[in-house]
Image (cartoon, rainbow, N blue to C red; front, top):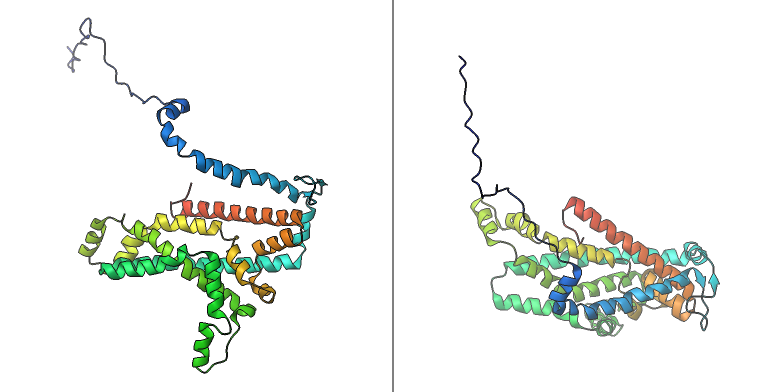
Length: 328
């Protein structure tokens, strides 16, 4: 006689009742035609922006072929004959190009160092202001220059910094000699960066103030319970809360790093300030439209675009691996 545990007899399901099996019901994917038929009103809103980018951004890329072909005004828009990398070798061996390339890097770095962190600082300071009227007044005054035309801003800078301008009148009143700010190369970078800060900091502040509204108030309350002061709350709660916005704007600023304010520099510089003011975009303009060397200018523009693409992709990759936030 053996002892053991008896298994219960198997119970068959009743007749007429099928055995129930657990199955995962997956939603059926819709084809692009079905999605277009269902939400055609929403997709129609994207038609004009797509046409804009197609006509003014993508179709002109075909013209980059003249960087490898000899182009003559009045001839074929795609050039007369192939010259290979001739124009690239020309500007790689041109000392003037490397001078403007250095000026571009210096001005781009200074603009990034000042115009990127200052909106964050101003937004954090305004976030601590409890008087609504004062906060709105400072915010309005700071972002109004963004809506001024670059021509108007350049004219204001020229009037303020001229020999008989407001700044030199203050210098004379203090007992000093007037300074020709716009004719001396050593002053151009300070003039450009300060005008860029004045024009762009207020607008960037609006973006960060909007991002600050998404930070959960419960996090501040938990930080206060843990004994964190205002500085600790800013460092451990506020800055991590707006980090995605900071990273996005940083990548966009790096993307426009090489295209340093072409319009403003073109309006403010002159042959006396070329040693520090001439950048790739203005040099390209002079080569293309004043010297009519369109193929040489196209080669420089293509080189600048490739450098900008590399900077954007690198910044996005570094941000994704270090911070965990990226544009794509």
